[in-house]
Image (tube, rainbow, N blue to C red):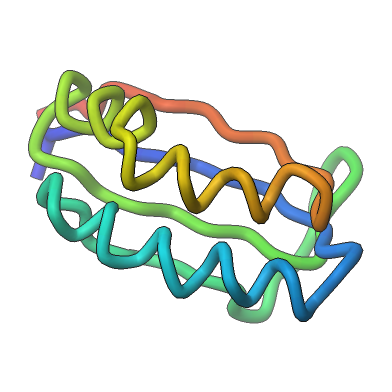
Length: 96
């Protein structure tokens, strides 16, 4: 399952507005082959500063992960996330 991953660390500051992001983002992610592997579950912080919400999404390739982020559908969702959360998101190529 090499592919690529989105790893997001999120602190939601406006739950109502962020809920709209989640409604729109899910279908956009699935459209590019994304599969949620972790989404907001319990965490144990061993190093560094944690966030309240952590998400890991698998994509078939780094190109798919990047295309998803840049897609009009995901950017529409992002319009709701920008002012309702503090986010860090990285795209990582997987290894075999």
